[in-house]
Length: 503
Ligand SMILES: Cc1cc2nc3c(=O)[nH]c(=O)nc-3n(C[C@H](O)[C@H](O)[C@H](O)COP(=O)(O)OP(=O)(O)OC[C@H]3O[C@@H](n4cnc5c(N)ncnc54)[C@H](O)[C@@H]3O)c2cc1C
Image 1 (spheres, helix red, strand yellow):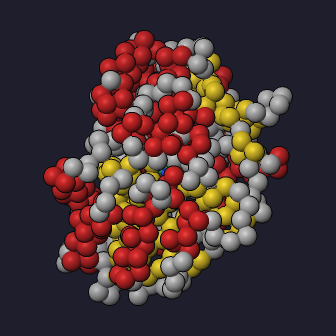
Image 2 (cartoon, helix red, strand yellow):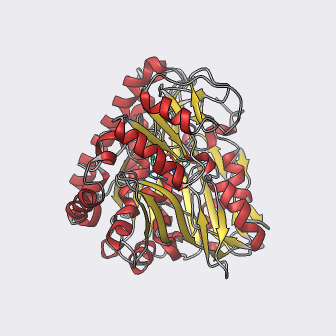
């Protein structure tokens, strides 16, 4: 049994999508042969990196060059060249969406937003301007100096751009909704090169569409996020091994999501997961949870007592924290981009028996499958993301948004099936396992009346269509119309790579 790998604590281990690290420099470079890359290199010699450059590090796909704009004007120039040369391009913020092609491309221009990394308050510090080149940990380290937080990702290494345009499950959801609901504005560079300031009063239709529309409208070059006073928290991570412990954790998750459970506490956010390791010995179960309770507590808050009372943990850092940022820092430290990974999402109502159902349908067969025990390093994990009615109400109260999930439907859980493994030779097998397991779970949940029709974009797999269920089908036609209006030449639609294109 593995006990020496705290990285396995978290279901978010790595991404198979390409990650690039590139930064400005005046050293000599070689550039790709593509005309767009040659033009970018001529115009922006210190911001364009070709194959062979010491600043060009690429781990999977193979763009002709990497371009690192410093601001929205550089993005405008790049899009003009890209459009004129009809070159494929892709856009990366933190690079954490584990979907091939979401932010990577072969032989096109790879726009890494790393250098657009402003963090600036307005006068009364109620709003923070955030560049999409930031990762959440950069943002939190900045805001926490002032006793403030924004509602971004829970894992510090994730990027600002993908999370905010895809929704955003955050530490403060019960009070503020999805992360995108905390936006008061966003600056977007459109396919035709215009820079548009969007908000509830300026281009409100585009602002609406960006909240869940991901990269289908343009490149967001600045987000305006509400800030909240936050200092201390009761938070951390705990992990247990073994099937018996997994059952106790499953029961605790089930109790948490039922009416009157921790899900109804406005200050609590919970990120539990149960996973199996078919490759190790006869296979084993591992369970973990990351609680975040905003406030000051000398002992475990009641909302998470079902978890803090479970004995036998082999890793446990859940405690009072003087600075809430220590949790996103702690979990960022376990990121490991050497593993291959796929996400797949569906949703179940917060109904009796749903946690056991997911364990029985997704996890047990993975242990029983002879095939998965052959896959080097195979892990199959289910993350249970409680989405409370309170959170959905807060989201709706914040103003219209494309995702438009109905609070009247009550609480539900995003079921994130995350599989990860070590060698590319097993990609197909692991993809099929995850898809088949999700299909089985969906079918069984429908029979039992506990299926909830929602696919969370930020947890979805290639081929899933998150947009269909937005607003119970009402949002998609409007999103498509807005795309036609703001991208009439189809520059974004046809040239930009994307994990999730509007159908
Ligand atoms: C370790 C880990 C932890 C996670 N934790 C959370 C969490 O706490 N809450 C949550 O909701 N999700 C979480 N996720 C899911 C995460 O939100 C998504 O994978 C998200 O898309 C990642 O954003 P990114 O900027 O890092 O990714 P990227 O891969 O850079 O971008 C994702 C997509 O968004 C597009 N995009 C990025 N920036 C822009 C922009 N400025 N303008 C237009 N399009 C843009 C890209 O083109 C790409 O298609 C986590 C994922 C991982 C791997």
